[in-house]
Image 1 (cartoon, one colour):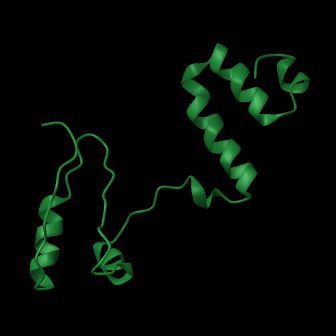
Image 2 (tube, rainbow, N blue to C red):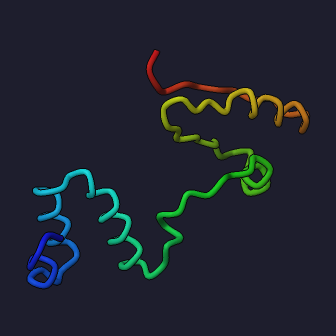
Length: 98
């Protein structure tokens, strides 16, 4: 926070509100910090690589597996190869653009 605002504002939520007014580019970092402090663990904001084998082991036949992706990421080919190796059929449904 700029200048004396760092000591004037003790509440993290209030700091995020003020930060959004002055530095909207820093809000994501503030949210990550807020969640880490509130949950007392950085586990909730860390990006971890997900193994399809781990997902498969934890899934059930009656549960769909949903991938929430960012722009430019397409795991379809990887998923189809993994399914072929496990002798499984896969149905895909795109909920994005197009």
